[in-house]
Amino acid sequence: MKMDKDKLLVTLVYVDDLIFASIDDEMNHEFSQNMSKEFKMSIIVELSYFLGLQVSQTTAGMFISQEKYLKDMLKRYGMEECAPMCTPMTTNCELSKDGESPSVDATLYRSIIGSLLYLTATRPDIMQAVEMVGRFQSAPNKSHLLVVERIIRYLKGTPNFGLWYPKSTSLIVTAYIDVDWAGSMDDRKSTSGNALFLGDCLVSWLSKKQSSISIFVIEVEYIIIGNCCTHILWMKEALKDANIETKQPITIYCENTSAISLSKNPVMYSKKKRILIKYHFPHEQVVEQNIKLEYINTKEKTAYIFIKHIPRE
Image (tube, rainbow, N blue to C red; front, side, top):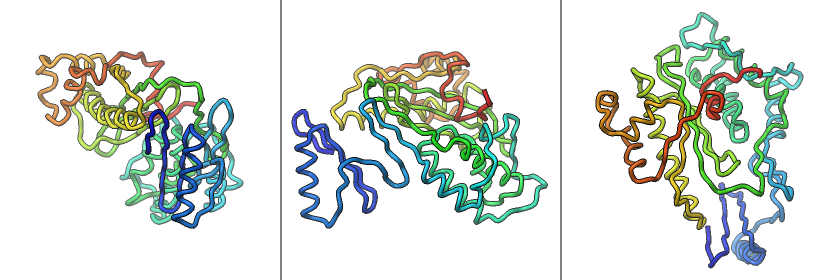
């Protein structure tokens, strides 16, 4: 990243692939000339394809998808002619490692999971399902593979889904969090999910099983607030590097009013004495006005798709 007064040049490097962009044509030209002198390289004027990501740019915004990558994946695993499904998983799907189903080829299973994980770069709608089936890579069985195949069949029916980033959007950061308390059938650990927006653009999302068991719902909600805080602070620093200041506290939308109260009021000792000290980060951030916590009702929970199976509706 390079700043020159009010001009900004951003570069992204992955091994021998490079993206650079600036609102100033002169900076773009100067950078491309300097790189061409140092390295043997070909330069494409407008970004259209990068590491499996298809980029479509218009005056209204930018659309990122992985349709070509998906078609190649379907061909690789012999599912080009599979029947499409309307959802990644059934809403009552519960997977366990202690099933009676016969074992399957673990190498093939891991290969498919790896391909699906790469697709989550533009497909947040499969994030929760892929995270769930990814838990059984050490000893997969037939029931796990059937769910993986259903995810692929869902993708077959939605190949052109992706992420839309409108040009005219605000630079206000907002976060949504949600949790599936004790959702794991094997160890009763909870699954947490969050979604970070820059204006109307979804820029970061997560679905992850927590590392420890939480006795109470308030505990698991409080932990995910802390995890979200660290991500928000990183995002604030990234925006600061781009000369974008976020002076107002960043809002985290949460459904659990007790977790919100616990973050704001350190006196509630009885409800937080079982929570490890390292998770008491949110209260400090609220006091320093880096974040603020707001209640959101169930119907508006954007992060819901990262902790529960997506219903057909």
